[in-house]
Image (cartoon, rainbow, N blue to C red):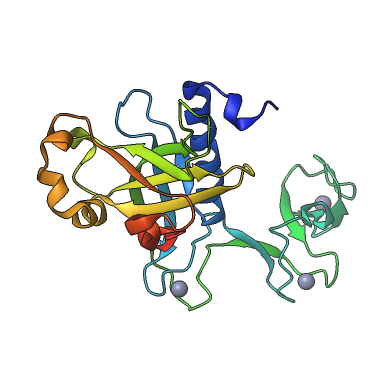
Length: 239
Ligand SMILES: [Zn+2]
Ligand SMILES: [Zn+2]
Ligand SMILES: [Zn+2]
């Protein structure tokens, strides 16, 4: 991979989006790209328990009725494919079509536990808290990425980041900004804020002429992120 400082603006911006999507996935979000939208980079989505807010698992569990062994995760190969003849009650293992005892074709499937011979059933996920209600959350995200600014004349590291913000970025609804700031060691830092957070932090400069004219550029310290520092890693704001 080339040095981050050598990436073109376009590639750097894609790289920032990739880092943000990877980070979001750690918080349980599923991430989608709008096919065409200038201001929304991601639509993110997750299922959570309606009662306690924990992540919800949409896949049903495969559990032994008798001993409770859970085959859902990786043990599916251990499930014994048992067939039982409806006519004579004979039990067989494997992919049989005919009863090996009475030649009947009336065979029942019985997925069977390899530990206790109990029957395995598919059960709907319920939360650890006992709830069987879940809800779906959707958020929209705009990513802005910045490298450390370099003084064009002297070539010196200015120890600041810069993000361009425009009135048309201020989309209403469950919309958030994630600023991906990459330091000189190529380490990303994420500032996560809602549109409202952004508006409040901007205060009066939101009404400034430069913002109205699309010429606003937020420059801030790369050490403590200035007034934006309070949004560092605030991924819980998305919840
Ligand atoms: Zn719960
Ligand atoms: Zn069992
Ligand atoms: Zn039979």
